[in-house]
Amino acid sequence: MNVAAIGWLATAVFASSYAFRQPLILKRIQAAAALLWVIYGFAIDAMPVVVANVVVAGAALWSSLTAPRT
Image (tube, rainbow, N blue to C red; front, side):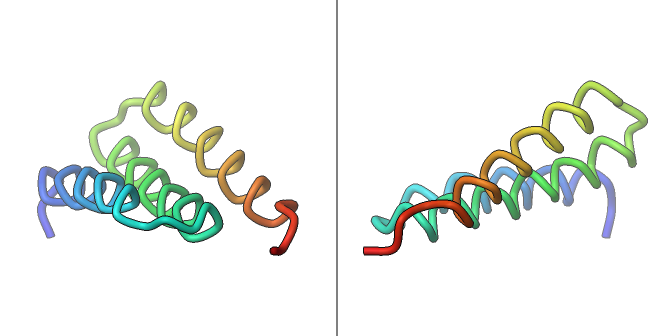
Protein backbone atom coordinates (compact mmCIF):
# COMPACT_ATOMS: atom_id res chain seq x y z
CA MET A 1 0.00 0.00 0.00
CA ASN A 2 1.43 3.38 -0.89
CA VAL A 3 1.76 6.20 1.61
CA ALA A 4 -0.99 8.37 0.17
CA ALA A 5 -3.41 5.44 0.34
CA ILE A 6 -2.81 5.19 4.10
CA GLY A 7 -3.70 8.86 4.50
CA TRP A 8 -6.85 8.46 2.41
CA LEU A 9 -7.83 5.35 4.35
CA ALA A 10 -7.36 7.22 7.64
CA THR A 11 -9.57 10.01 6.31
CA ALA A 12 -12.27 7.57 5.22
CA VAL A 13 -12.24 5.68 8.53
CA PHE A 14 -12.46 8.92 10.52
CA ALA A 15 -15.28 10.29 8.37
CA SER A 16 -17.19 7.01 8.62
CA SER A 17 -17.16 7.22 12.42
CA TYR A 18 -19.87 9.87 12.24
CA ALA A 19 -22.27 7.32 10.74
CA PHE A 20 -22.42 5.57 14.11
CA ARG A 21 -24.81 6.75 16.83
CA GLN A 22 -23.31 4.88 19.77
CA PRO A 23 -20.55 6.98 21.38
CA LEU A 24 -18.49 3.90 22.26
CA ILE A 25 -18.32 2.73 18.65
CA LEU A 26 -17.69 6.28 17.37
CA LYS A 27 -14.75 6.73 19.76
CA ARG A 28 -13.19 3.38 18.89
CA ILE A 29 -13.44 4.02 15.17
CA GLN A 30 -11.92 7.45 15.68
CA ALA A 31 -9.10 5.81 17.67
CA ALA A 32 -8.50 3.38 14.80
CA ALA A 33 -8.38 6.28 12.34
CA ALA A 34 -5.91 8.12 14.58
CA LEU A 35 -3.69 5.03 14.65
CA LEU A 36 -3.76 4.99 10.83
CA TRP A 37 -2.71 8.65 10.93
CA VAL A 38 0.18 7.66 13.22
CA ILE A 39 1.35 5.14 10.62
CA TYR A 40 0.98 7.79 7.92
CA GLY A 41 2.90 10.31 10.02
CA PHE A 42 5.81 7.89 10.45
CA ALA A 43 5.75 7.10 6.73
CA ILE A 44 6.08 10.76 5.78
CA ASP A 45 8.45 11.53 8.67
CA ALA A 46 6.07 14.06 10.24
CA MET A 47 6.39 13.86 14.00
CA PRO A 48 3.69 16.49 14.67
CA VAL A 49 1.19 14.20 12.89
CA VAL A 50 2.41 11.23 14.90
CA VAL A 51 2.29 12.96 18.28
CA ALA A 52 -1.08 14.64 17.69
CA ASN A 53 -2.68 11.38 16.68
CA VAL A 54 -1.13 9.35 19.49
CA VAL A 55 -2.80 11.85 21.83
CA VAL A 56 -6.12 11.59 19.95
CA ALA A 57 -6.01 7.78 19.82
CA GLY A 58 -5.12 7.59 23.51
CA ALA A 59 -7.91 9.97 24.51
CA ALA A 60 -10.47 8.15 22.36
CA LEU A 61 -9.48 4.74 23.70
CA TRP A 62 -9.31 5.91 27.31
CA SER A 63 -12.70 7.61 27.12
CA SER A 64 -14.24 4.58 25.42
CA LEU A 65 -12.91 2.28 28.15
CA THR A 66 -14.00 4.50 31.03
CA ALA A 67 -17.40 5.46 29.58
CA PRO A 68 -20.40 4.32 31.61
CA ARG A 69 -22.17 1.37 30.05
CA THR A 70 -25.83 2.01 29.33
